[in-house]
Length: 161
Image 1 (cartoon, rainbow, N blue to C red):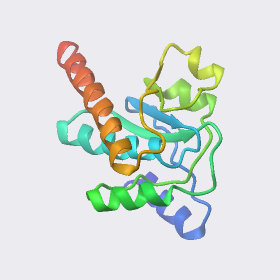
Image 2: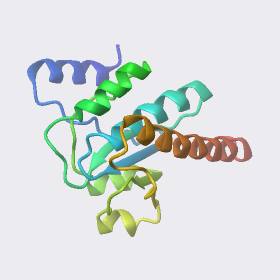
Image 3: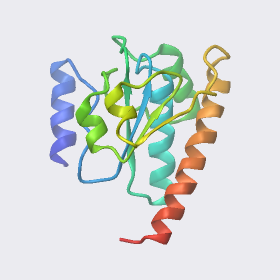
């Protein structure tokens, strides 16, 4: 069993799970929303599923600019109904190390801290609906995630490692 997975499982049993750190060993995407509890979680869940299905090495994590204590109940319910694996962790503030280790940082309906905007890695998805329900929010996010994965897949084919 992977040491990181084992450590996260033990930490979860003991309590106080935070969102896992980004590994510098693989290309990483950070999705950020205000509370780090809904839109960024949905984006992370779909991105990781679709990247894995495409055989891409990228993985994502979620962060917030003003994190709340727990993940959104509505987002969790929607992801479960969609049959999508829920990312591990709790809402966590985006940190300079997240930005440093990331290849891409996406703001979903929020303003990123200056360290992220100055990184040259940040883009904004400001058209994701706030209050139109899970399905509309998910659909907008999945559209962005799919376009991002198309771009990443094209780049990896143009520049194989």
